[in-house]
Length: 285
Image 1 (cartoon, rainbow, N blue to C red):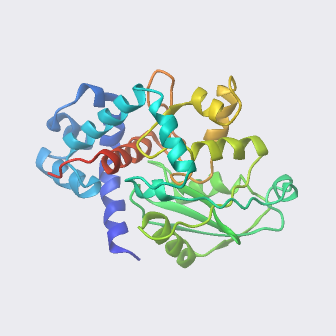
Image 2: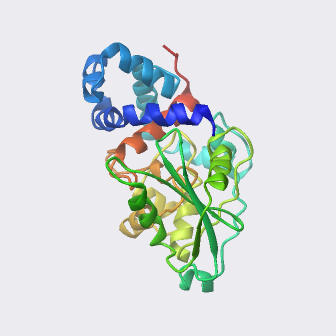
């Protein structure tokens, strides 16, 4: 088990309430003292734990979010980044180098809701709290995070209901090995997309949003070739089974609000903030 992942998981557990609080107020640039109070920690302790988790101070973290939002507001530049991604050019974020060789299961497997599939799963620490990893024969099929106040059993059942007819086998060792690839700096795992055709179309569109950028649900619908289908696109985004690597956290409301996230708003702001720091930089405290 990676001690680094264990430490980051423990740090995130302390930061989650504060991250949700910052997600609603970062435009106001709240003070260190106010953010620390939201976390239930002293300012000194909050600064130290937050910086250890994020790699930058809370102030730099909020500045990176603001910078990323300003870039989004400039608008059309995102198309250039999408073009760079499609051409195979790498960017400053490690996730920007992610290349998905899509190998979907057959329509029959989808209709049977996983019947005939063997899925291995397990729980493991991650930079965003405890993670549930689901592995299909051809690659990573699911990545979920335990929500605040939620048990492992509840997290498991939330994922299991997607493919209830599959043969689910507990394999913590395989989950830990997969987590090392997901959250490490090496080669990313292949993603196995199991969903309805429209869902897969939307999930592929999400992969075109560069790290550090965000798009509205309507813009994602257009990117998926379904302009005007913002509500259906939002539902498909909410059904995404592979958190983080299929970046549903980069979809936001049309007015720029960071709306609900299946695994908790704190995790969404954490992911966006980390990507903004990696992309635009920030001075460590």
